Image 1 (cartoon, rainbow, N blue to C red):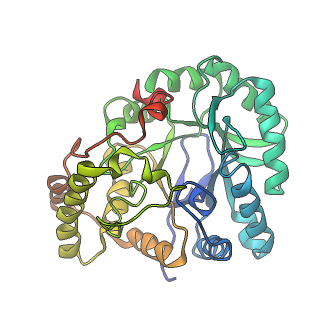
Image 2 (cartoon, one colour):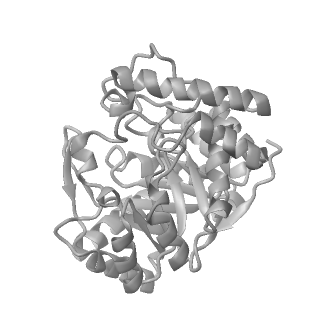
Length: 342
């Protein structure tokens, strides 16, 4: 790959990272079966291209994803391995059937989760550590305070947040320095623009945006008649159901026309739009691309070469207006866990 990797700094206190991060969840869980060898090859190719930020969760296939990343890093050249930064979410409670049982943000649980993650990743520290969803029974100050203790001991380098609203961001930032907020942000998921983005800008906190292609929905590759496996999250996601899917794919076709005029792919223009939102909102926004294959990674990296001017941005937002998406981004039970949606 010939793309020259750009860099960003995660907020006023965080590390320097690549302008695009690699979201590794789909290599282990929630999008159907994955190819282990291709996943590891994709991680290696990302590192070779200058991608430094690898995002995971300790609950992705019950530790499988962390083990996969650890394996890939051990097999990578030393220079690439040393440049890699791990961003880890914790707190989700699972059962042997793959079910979800809530979240645990107690300080003792934070330390326990971290100990297991360090072992699975095969490292002596985690670069950015965050609870995946706020535990409603534990004040965010206690959870963040426990991570801050891990920072003091050298087991964690920086503290992050995930899917929290403006008030919770302020409370967390008053407890300890926060590097970034990880949250869904894409052309069809723009709810953070009203309160959350201004709060991160005010407090010097970066945004690492996941779902920039809305789980493949706005990638330009999702077919209307595609059959989803029973172990694929999208089989239950409201945006992929019935009339919602048809309406959302109509938006994609409108976006495709804009992309074709620019001579780029739908995925590239959608990622480029998210990249452009950092400067537009005077904050740092780092998209996490969930590529599971090297060809999809190559396409995503091409977004770094796409420059959008004022006319381009207007055409994109005319094709996909804010709030145009049909359906919530999660099923109702999972939406209830999102502090960011309250």
